[in-house]
Image 1 (cartoon, rainbow, N blue to C red):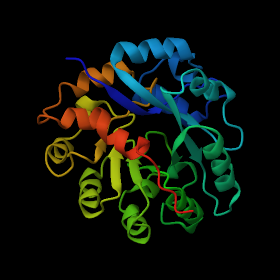
Image 2: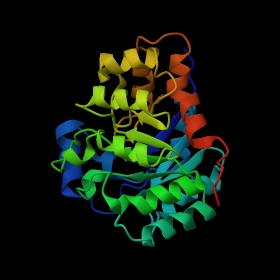
Image 3: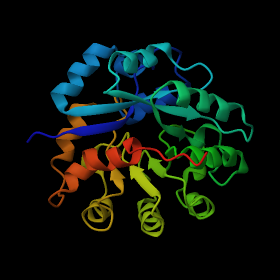
Image 4: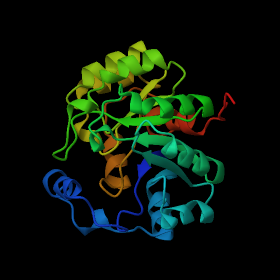
Length: 274
């Protein structure tokens, strides 16, 4: 079966700095990975891999203050294939927000991203509020990691229940939970039923291990809410897409999961408020 996919979480510049110890633990304890975790990926071999596996577009991770020049060259060479998610660490100050704005104005940025365990602050902390406000103003989707993190870092801050208040206070904010929601899948599903603006991507999660309650939700009320993502090279395109095709999904749901939900959330024309 030929599939087409959009991958919203791809890493190409993990070899540019020494990885923190918690990422080394994840590589060794969770994914049993080798040296492919912490190396730079070159653009043409990645395009070959994407073409082979049916990945039409990839959203690459970059930082704010000094975004990877290596990663930025991908979209320069293939502007119809590569786009960017900007990682931030909210502090409550405007510096990182202005850095995001500069990248948004000069590069094909389609998403902002925060990882609560990196600061230990839950999404209800007011440090996030300038980012939330500007993402609403710019109509820029925001992904927030949920679920207990793999590395030995704070986990409670990634309980999806914190997003209940965020969605209530910022109903126009287009939100996507990332890296699944284990062990709080039921909470995440109930919140997505409650809030139209809330989605979930299964980045860094092997499709064959997705829980049955999520598959049921995908086949029913959640067919427009769940997005595929790999976290490549943590999980390869080929492995994830092969496993996705084995899921017990109703007709049309696989295409939404792999492609059209991401197309709508990240690539529909933005409508900035100002």
